[in-house]
Image (cartoon, rainbow over all chains, first blue to last red; front, side, top):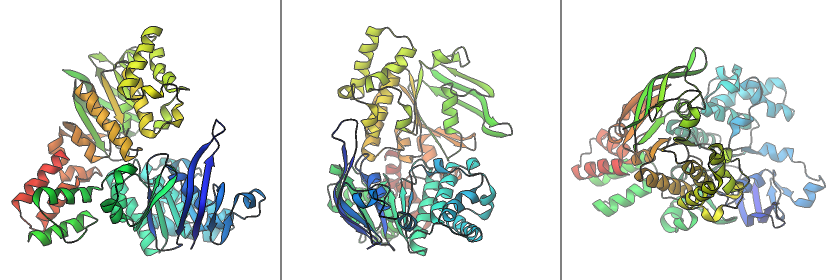
Length: 287
Length: 268
């Protein structure tokens, strides 16, 4: 297991003495390759806090998080017994508004900043930049451009390229598609899926979009009031659990299937998870 | 009755790179119009021009028969309010009460009336129990409701929602949408800027912006079925219509399914 949470509690210090409990008794394991996970739950349920424990940006108050064999614990971190660099290299985290964090004069400098910080020689860092800019769906001409003149979607892609340049095994993205137009969103989701599929990396996405969950995720985590209330298959989640209790919505595809079943008596033999698959399934029944 | 008249408006931040070009748009009182467009199409710039946060480089904007200018902008802001995308970026008050009061203080509303209006509109958005709370402890949906109360308290006739639901969780989004619906039923003119195709079903009319120009301005029904326009603008058809078109392409023809999907794509 690449990451293992063992009964983790985390509390933010508040204005009052009580503080604010953001994680309660979380135990879960994540593999270092081949996973495609979506993390969902209402605002304030602890999603961002959870992922910030995955690369030791935050440290549990009680319990522990094992990240690639390094046990991240409060005391050990305090006494600086733990080197965090190797963790940050293995687990890349893209914040919710990564575009605010671009700061160099050129895209190239922004992407090579991380690797050079980790001691990668300049020439090698540039080669990596040329490679990762294509992975995120931009061409090499972008490397010479200023990050500030790019569109929102392009800035997001550049920041993701910057994290990919560190060659992490696990890529975590906090609401990467919020605010993007439909095609921009679809294109970016395809980028994440390719990173997962072609490079065999583990991808974890925080989202409020149930369609993303249903169409892409192999595994879904649901947070509710600081607790992890579901860890499993997305189809099971939406078909067998009382998702309204967790303030989740029904994905469009599932909703359409249910309504056609109810109103037209059409029962499909499979459980399609994309518009194309749904069309094929309908074709089968209607022919 | 016309409440907004945008006549040949253009805007640029940098000469030579227009953000909006020759935009003409009229909005009637009580209408709900949806503005769709790709990222960078000029949607948010248009909303900032309407509330006088930016000034048009060319053309005129009239709100309730008053031409927007440096001298009229403060009067016009009494008629038109805006709720922004990020609920965290629009709070000025220490408490919810202060926050709703902010706009009223600017309008120099007398204290007694101010207290009344704050109570009244906090109740309307169902946040009366939160008046003494600090805004940053609220959820995203609650924050947007407070922002709406602040605008309503100024008794504006028009509210622009500039991607106001895009950062909210499903529950927060649904509360805000039903609130918008209620306000519109009561006569408030709603301009909803969004990327969510489903939200456009609430309104009668859709305006599609592309690269700073109006590409299409028609009824919701017509625009949602206009595959070419939507695709050109980085948008997509709603799922039932996408499935319907895909079935047609496969030459699967079932009248019952066809009319059902068609109906669904117009009602959600």
